Amino acid sequence: MKKIVLSFVYWLPFILISCGINDFTDASGSDPDFRSEMRNFVINISRYARSQNPAFAVIPQNGIELVTLNGEDDGELSTDYLNAIDGHGQEDLFYGYDNDDIATLSSDTGYITAFLNVSRNQGKVILVTDYCYTHSKMDDSYSLNNAEGYVSFAADERNLNNIPAYPTVPYDVNSFDINSLSDVRNFLYLINPENFVSRAAFIAAVASTDYDLLIMDLYFSDGTEFSSSEITQLKEKANGKRWMVICYMSIGEAEDYRYYWQASWVTNPPSWLCEEDPSWPGNFTVRYWVEDWQNIIFGNDSSYLKKILDAGFDGVYLDIIDAFEYFE
Image (cartoon, rainbow, N blue to C red; front, side, top):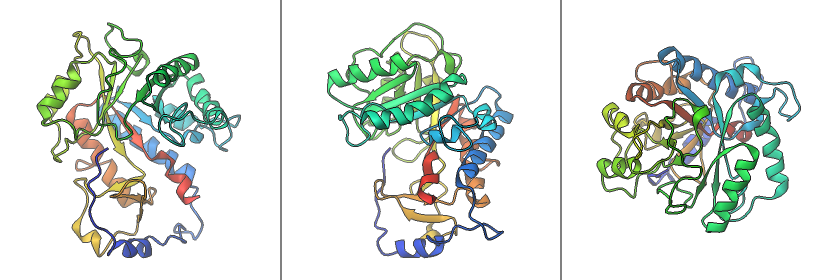
C-alpha cells in the first residue's frame, strides 16, 4: 500500500507517552486477553457487515493462531470466530517470510500450515500471498499452494502496486461466474494504485484481466474514494464473467493518510494510539479493543466499514489481525 511519509520525529514521543507502552490494563486493572479481543473485534465487524449485506465476505489476513482458543493447532476451535469469517489471508507462506524471493524456512511454513489447515478443514477458503519475482519461484509458489488446497497469488512487488506480467494469464484461469469465495481459483492483490495515472486507467487495467477475485483499496492514490458505479464497473472481468471485488481495511493500525486521521492527534493523540510501525511509516499500532477506535472502523454511518459497504464491495480483507502479538 502507498504510504504517505510525513515527518513525525518531533511528535512521536507524545504518542508513546499517551499510549502507555508499559500499561495496557483494562478498567478492572487487568491486562486484556489480546487474542480474545481481536476475535471479538472481527466477529462484531462481521455481524455489522452481514446485517447490511448477508452475502458480504469477511477475510482476516495473518494472525491465523486465532482459529483455536489456546493458540495451538490441535486446540479447541474458536467456533464463533470461524463462523464469522469466510476465509483466511496469509502472507509469506512459501516465499517472502524473511526476504522477498527467498523460500520461507520449512519450519515456519509447517507452523503456519498447521493452523491454515484447521481453517481450511472448516470450509474456509485460504488465500496465500507469496512474495517472489523469479519465474520459477512463482511457478513453485502456485504449485505448492495448489497442493495444499489453497488459492494463491505470487506477488512480484511487496508494495502490491502492479499487475504481474508473469504468468501471462492467471494461474488456474477459468470462465466461471464467481458468486462466492468458494468459487475463487485465483486472485489479484492490488491495493496500491500509485503506478496508475488515473482511476480510469486503474479500472481499465484491472478489468482487462481474468482473475476471480480482486483485493483493492477503497481509495485511489490521490485520496479520493472509488464510487459505487466504479466498483460495479470493476465486477466484470475481461471474459465477461463476474468476479468478486474485496476491499482492504487495516484494523490493527491507524494510518495517517486516511480520512479519519485528525490533525489534533499531532499534539494530543487519543489514548488508544500507539507507536509508529517502523516497517511502514505513517502506520501506528492501536489499542484495537478500545471503543473509540472500533467506532472508527464499524457500527455507524461514518465508519470505515460503512463506506466500504456503501461502495458495493463484495467483502472486506482485514489486515493487522496479528496486532495481538505486539501487545503480548
